[in-house]
Length: 156
Image (cartoon, rainbow, N blue to C red; front, top):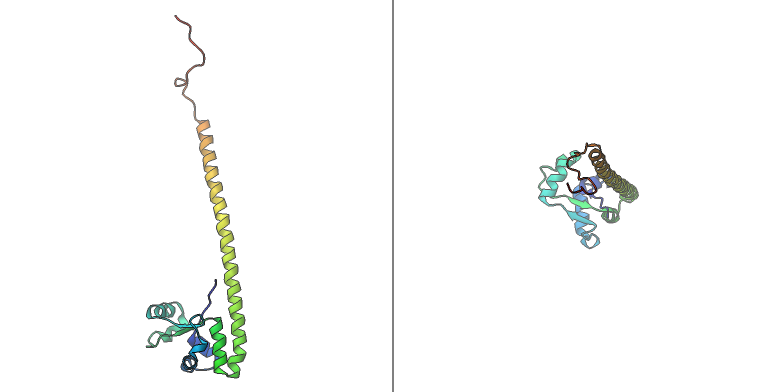
């Protein structure tokens, strides 16, 4: 399963409201936002997100922990905000989530095929290595003294 998330500051900007207004709407409607729709980052996760996403550097010194929305949470947020812009933009947000999911899945599919090809090549490499070893052994001169002659030797 591919899980794509959107942080509250980005969603609020898209919907044309402040982050505070978005989070207040979520808190007023907790029954509409189960944990698979929205969750709050812990301190460690917040630091990681701020470190990896340059546009979120303003969150670095914020004392509050950001909320993160799944696709369903983003739609529900548009519903509870009830602004025209939020409703219109939610359609684009959903389409973006769908496109991202498709890109991730095609990337996984490609990665799987690449891994499969790599395993085949590795098997061929091992087989070729054994073949070269056998050829090298055949190319080595044999020591005639070590070979016993076939037959018997008459008594002298």
